[in-house]
Amino acid sequence: MTRTFPPRTRLRRLRENRVLAESIREVSLEPRQMILPLFVVPGSGKRTPITGLHGVDHWSVDRLCEGVDEALTAGVQSFMLFGLPTEKDANGSTAWRDDQPVQQALRFLKERYGREIQLITDVCMCEYTDHGHCGFLTADGRVDNDTSAAALGRIALSHVRAGADTVAPSAMMDGQVASIRKALDDGGFQTTPIMSYSSKFASAFYGPFREAAGSAPSFGDRRGYQAPSTNWREAIRESLLDEEEGADILMVKPSLLYMDILARLREATMLPLACYLVSGEYMMLRHAMAAGALDEERGLLETHFALRRAGADLIISYAAVDVARLLKR
Image 1 (cartoon, one colour):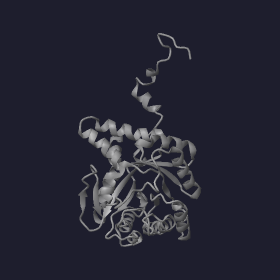
Image 2: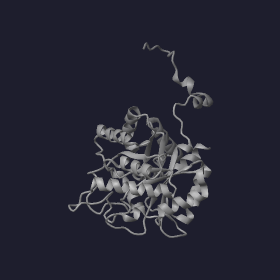
Image 3: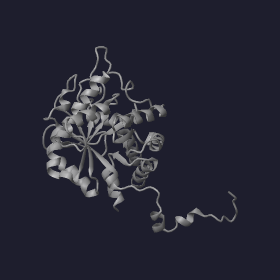
Image 4: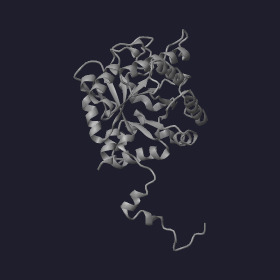
């Protein structure tokens, strides 16, 4: 390209008029693309702020409508449910019980809102096991992949029977999507989609969530079954394997530190792509805002637009309602 001075090409011509600039924007962000996580706990009358997660609460089932109504007013219609059980054991056996908070919340919200909302459930065992790992343990303390994957199918089926619109397996067991697809199909739920946490990394940025969900492992870590943060080819392979097994939506988690994975996966698949702005990333932004180092409005919008630009169709975010309100101004 031949450059001249004064320049013949002035890119600012398309930026001066705000209406023009908005009309040719390459990436859009809308409240309908946001998914709000909700933490459901046993009991009644509870809306308790979570200390390590700014603006996020623990909800008892009977008060969930407050959070859902706030989100709907802002334009957010999709919710991901995480449950804290009444009790834990080595096998996470409360995960598929109908009397637990997630199953109760699904029935309650579906009766109240019907098809006005989308309810997505996290399908994992870490909140339900007394050791905090995402599946059954062998005698030598390793996670047994195949029996755990089978149990995930049982959990997913219990969620869908209670009213879940979409299930989202996050345990990173090999074959978990195939196991869940078979369980749902055999149970008569052939049209229920699976949003797989397909490229989920062993990350240092899950800390606030693990405190909120009571899901930190009591020994060791999850690097044996979650993807290493150094390996992009392995992460793409994980997602493509889940696609082969029947996943309907793929996901990258975390997201801000893994936008290269988002972009690469966007090129590798035709499936819808979600990302999770995880608790540590979210709180990193909040701490910067509290310190005066980052403007809240501009920082939140720029962050979520960046995830869309990298290739995400859907964004799971603790800031979903705040972002939706900003978009409506």
